[in-house]
Length: 160
Image 1 (cartoon, rainbow, N blue to C red):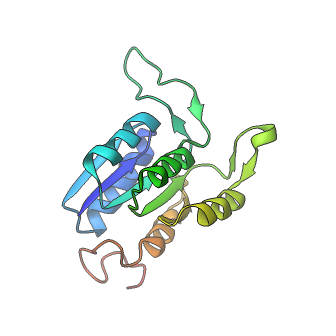
Image 2 (cartoon, rainbow, N blue to C red; image 1 turned 180 degrees about the vertical axis):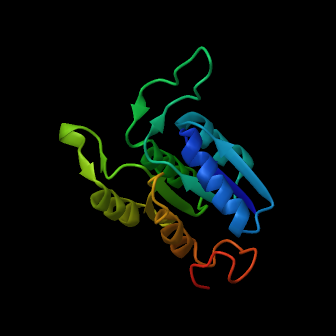
């Protein structure tokens, strides 16, 4: 099974990677660090499962480039592009934020969940990630369910 993590925050990406590798039988773990590299990875590598950030920079950050402004709905745009291309890979959104956009485009996490559920059949759900609290892990495991093979039935300690 090939899994892609699209995440621009280094610590969050490392936490997700660690969780996935520890508890799930993944053959190949691919990472992308921006909207553009995430979309390119989906099209080129055709992963079996995608963990997707919602708000991220348009381009990868480097020592000389800042990656551009953060795009508050980059994940939604990736889902839209996948839909247009007929790519039905399951996508699970993991986000730091509980509000998105600015003023006229403002949306709560619950509103975003409803929109993504109604628009994209490959959208699995959204987990609210917080680096200082591990409650995102059982929420993530629950949404993953049986869609990724586990390393062991009781390894996660979250039921199973």
